[in-house]
Length: 495
Ligand SMILES: C[S@@+](CC[C@H](N)C(=O)[O-])C[C@H]1O[C@@H](n2cnc3c(N)ncnc32)[C@H](O)[C@@H]1O
Image (cartoon, rainbow, N blue to C red; front, side, top):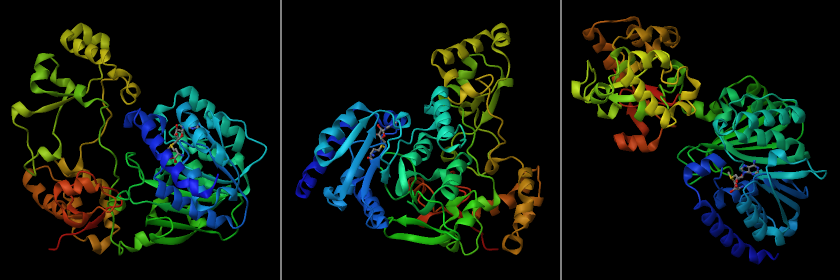
């Protein structure tokens, strides 16, 4: 293929991508991990990787090739003649057909099938550029997970958490496909850097290969038009890490021109379970100020798995004759609240959360209308969803303490006293707040006012949410903010 033909083929590819994407909804594509890489991003990654390759001949692999964004980017950054060989693997027959039609004359061989089931070829690859499917673990069947785990055990003798998404298996299984000293650039969700299920991947990156660079995009940087993830490009070489190795961590902007970066000793990574604290420039931005994550354990709230079914109005409770012992009065979303302290909602607007531990047989015998309601849920398959199927019985709820900001007593704050104390003078007023374990409403006023006036700078925070609440420069009050990130900075009110 002549280099001058590239723009025409790339245009055809984008057209194909649009056509194939339109066949599925965003939810369906999420399930199959089908989110294409934007062309500029693919080119920037290809350019960056090629610069690391020196003069090594390129034998290219994309184990999740789609329509071939990375192959296209590679050809645009070198000439196609600069690529010795190229292979793309693709599960979806329509994508595989399309990639083959677009690129076979340019030297890309498309293998149709599941990458994780392919035999490892004799001729290995010197360059892997890819954006693997982000299929979450709940979309992988038990059999599928068992097969992937066995494969991983055979290949790298590694065990991996059942919570790992498909992209983790892709990255690890690709090890055997790479030539020694080969280079890989993986565009993957950045969550592996902090979560428990990412530990195997982190170990692999620190022990089995030389981790060169991790660039994280800020959530506000758009890498995918419709995938709700924050992504990182992970670049590594298949060779053992040299002694005293340091890894480049960068954040924001592009991989070639990041807004923040630092070199992190490999040893620091080995001993850290939270890699998103790097680059250290991010910590410098804090000026030593604490973040929410330094003080509180931040977890998601209670998730029912089917709010329409589990949250009932007063009228629905009466209609289905659900006994009050199986109902918890709850507040609506914070945006519907007009007061700081809520004693109870007006009767007509009170909402209830269904939470019952009685066996279905007992319910059937004692409360037939309530039983009927549960059967209605079964017909809608609510009992079989990911969250409900993990609860016993499915119509009971996780045990979660009430949300701190709306607690009727401030006793919960006792739990964080030790951590507050360790901040000494910087937080001199807050220990008072923590010690005041009050039960009377009047006593709540002081700690409430302090909390209400805390300013939270949510660098990682959903900008849409901030816009809706009209807080300038990413700053909002703790009391008004429902989506704190553990990295959000806290600023304390003046006396
Ligand atoms: C995130 S998309 C990336 C596509 C393309 N590389 C890009 O960057 O635009 C992942 C691709 O992997 C394919 N895929 C999903 N599961 C796969 C599997 N088990 N083996 C091979 N390909 C798979 C999807 O159909 C999709 O085309």
